[in-house]
Image 1 (cartoon, rainbow, N blue to C red):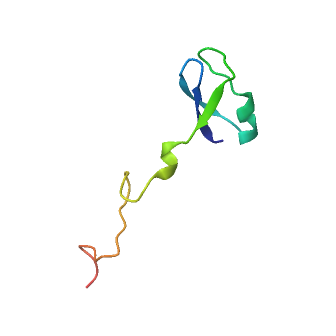
Image 2: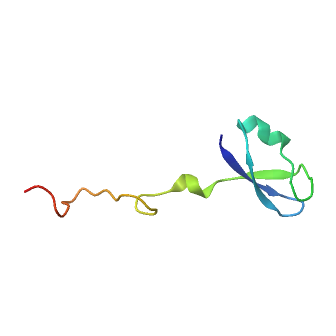
Length: 68
């Protein structure tokens, strides 16, 4: 299930919620103050670019130790 990030417009708390679908976002309340005045935020992890995280790096160039 996806994790969505929210911001409470009343107390400024940032928090995450696990929701089955985005329709449930209308029912989200702030865990800090109980307000229903929350905004869904864009998640930063969805914009991961090549070479910006751990894992194998791919390249179109020749690799060392390859077949000759």
